[in-house]
Amino acid sequence: MTLLQLFISFLQIGLFSVGGGYAAIPLIRNQTVDIHRWLTGEQFMDLAAIAEMTPGPIAVNGATFVGLKIAGLPGAVIATLGCITPSLIIVSLLAYVYRKYRELPVLQSTLAGLRPAVVALIFSAGINMLIQIVFGSRGGIGFSNIQWAALALFIAAFAVLRKCRWNPILVIGLCGAFGLILGAAGVW
Image (tube, rainbow, N blue to C red; front, top):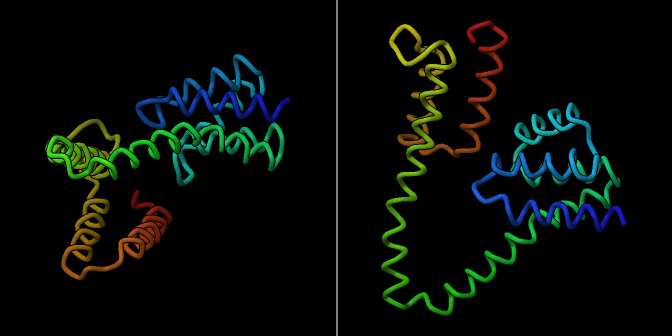
């Protein structure tokens, strides 16, 4: 019965958490703390922090962690499957429709219209991340608040990605290593 409850709870979360991972957090809390009482409020806060830190979508990470805590490895698998099933079905249906009707001018026009919006969203997210990294939480955007080490690391990473065409995974790893070194040295 617990495995079925895990599946149904995370199926609902996967179906109704439109808007990304942060939109899923209140739904996960409602299911795990308020309805089923699988977690305490404090345990949920720990879960949210871990789910945000680990690679992958927050809802999927949360489902895996809750399932593991409640029913071990089978619980982790069942909760994760419940969380991803709605997306799997919706994307499969969209792929079918796209493959069947991809030559229609109306579909091509729609996709052409969406491309600039997608580029703008990605650009906006990148700029927001850059501002947060370079200016940090020191009280706003201003010359005196620039974190010079972070800015230098960004410029170096951008340069080797664009000019030298290094592998992005290598650049991410190197930036992480430099971040650890600079953090240990007290630069940030």
